[in-house]
Amino acid sequence: MINSQRRSKLLNQLSVFRELYLGSAMTKKELTKSTGLSTPTVTKALSGLSARKLITEKGRKDIPTGRKPKKYGLNNNSIYCLGVDLEIPDLRLAVYDLSRRMIATKGSYMEMDDLQKNPAAYITEKLSREFKDLVYHEEMAENSIVGAGIATSGIVKDGKFRPFSRFVSFSDIELKNPLEKKLGIPTSFGNDVDLQLLSELDRIGPINDEGHVAIYFGARLSGKRKPIIRIGGSIAIGGDICHGAGGSAGEFGHMSIRSEDADAELPPTNCGNDNCLESFVNARLEENGGLSVPDSISRAIQQKIKDLVFVFSPSLIIVDLEAFPEITDEVITELESFTSTLGQSMGLENIRIKEPLDRDRSATRGAVINHFNNLLLDPSNFSVLMENYKS
Ligand SMILES: [Zn+2]
Image 1 (cartoon, helix red, strand yellow):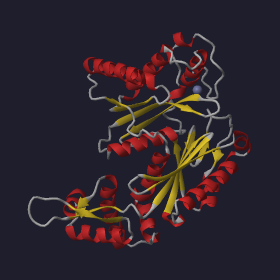
Image 2: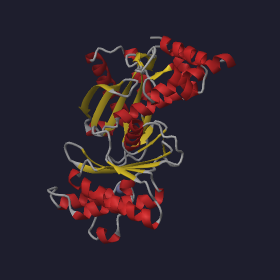
Image 3: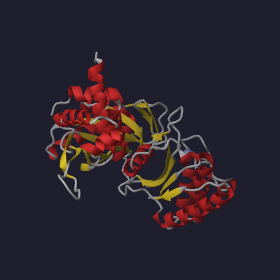
Image 4: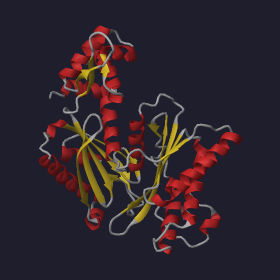
């Protein structure tokens, strides 16, 4: 039982930590102002956070006259988080510090035959070997890594996932328990495109507007042996990812295409929608020998994003056409002209359209942010961390 005095001390520490985690280095005076806490309370919180090595002094603030006040910020040599991108069959691991900066990375490849025989056992074995390897080569203390965020394709719910577009699996792959047992650290899971959006939102900064709606539309090239275009998406409302009741919200790649573009036969789909956009794009590309991007693909993508504008009334649209860099400008220009028309006809203004800030486009960073946010910004998890973590 945590008594109320102890609890309010932890909540004060959390509100100071939150400012430094979501913002940049600040002076005591700035922290007092932004948290609404008294100066002695901020002083106490700072010393508690420093004792746990979560924050540190970051030089002094330049002011025109008088004594320059000390600034405080995150201690990036304290705790780390592992990010994993299960981009089946590719596998990517990366370690990030508290400021969500990547400090080490490692890529690998999963054998599809072995993976399909027993996905959970294979991934657990493979991942723990790669993790040990990474930690060893970077000479990191294993206990400084406080958790692992895992990004997977397909539908993700409660640490289980179903990568329905990678291989046919008619049951969910339960990865959380075996992985936590093997790695010895807590894990959290998310859909790769959801996590990509989370990473973008982290770079933009805290979203204080509850009505802010961001949508992410991605078309990526995946697979080294047999390249295939994956189309996915994500929705965030007020900065929080919208998962839907079944965890599948934002699977924009499986929406139907217009009937006039679907005249030709499309290959059978794993998703259950015969008229699916992802299937259409891959079929058209194959017909074209992959030499250039047919107009029908550009048209279909533009149309999909336009439809999303009517459904979600977004504040921000992130267009990630990594698979088709040659049509990115065309698509964005068309969307800008479309939204400006909507500004006149429907009064929908201020829809920002942009490419992702994260050029790396791996979901490892988003997976880490997901894990860190759970661990560091939730009062009960934060109190466990403050109680247990001694560096
Ligand atoms: Zn589909």
